[in-house]
Image (cartoon, rainbow, N blue to C red; front, side, top):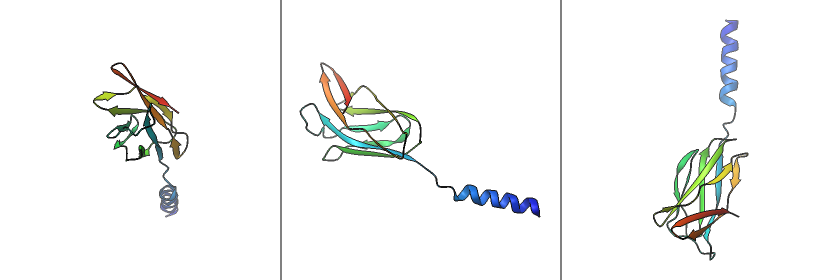
Length: 110
């Protein structure tokens, strides 16, 4: 009986602990300050692929906390250089400028 009570108490404490998840959000612009319409952002550590809105904003949720991630940006059939970000807290900001360099697409964190 005593053992069952302790196990039940431990289980309740475990279930009552808040689950923390991180998110990465920001704004995407091109080198002229315009929104790259149709650009897509993906995080290597999880989440789903997000298309930027009409203001260039994106938000990727349900990512693991305290993890190294890379943001992968696709625009006009090109993939930009990955942008590294560490999810040190629940909300992590990454504003990015896209710049064409010949046939390459560079992603520069602002």
